[in-house]
Length: 158
Image (cartoon, rainbow, N blue to C red; front, top):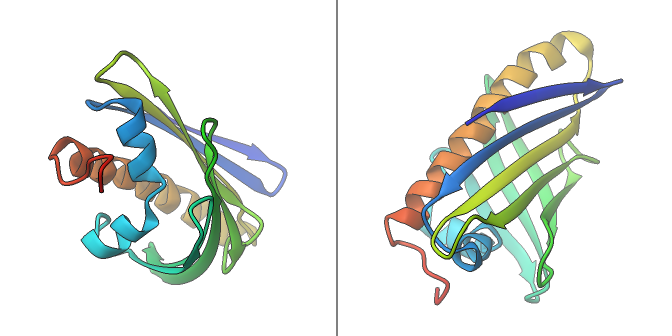
C-alpha cells in the first residue's frame, strides 16, 4: 500500500491505494454507505452519526482521534453514479479539506481504491505531527474497509 505525502503551501495531500477482493459496485456502495459505517462500527475508535441522507447526498458527523487530539468534524458526501466519492469537510479541525475515494474495477471481482486526503494543516509545528498521524489513520481506515467488505459483512444489498 504505497503512501505519498505532498505539501502544497499549507495544504497537505496524502494519497494511498488498496486492492479489495470485491466488485467495484460493492466497494463503491460500502464506501458511500455512512449509515453502515455508523451501525457496524467499521472503523475502530471512529464514531459516525448521519445527520441527513437523501440518497444522493449525506451529511454526517465523525468523531475520532488524530494522535493525541480528539476531533469532531462534519462532512458532506455527494454520491454520483460514477466518479469519485468526495467527502468534503464542512466543519471542524480540517474544514475546507476533503477525503476522496476513487474506486477502479481491476476485473469482475477485484477493485482498487485510490484515497486522497487534502487538508490545510497549520500551524507548522502541529502540521508535522498531524501529517504522520493522518497518513497512518487513512491507511488503517482502508484496511478496515477492506476487512469489512472481504469478510462478507457488507454486500451491495445492505
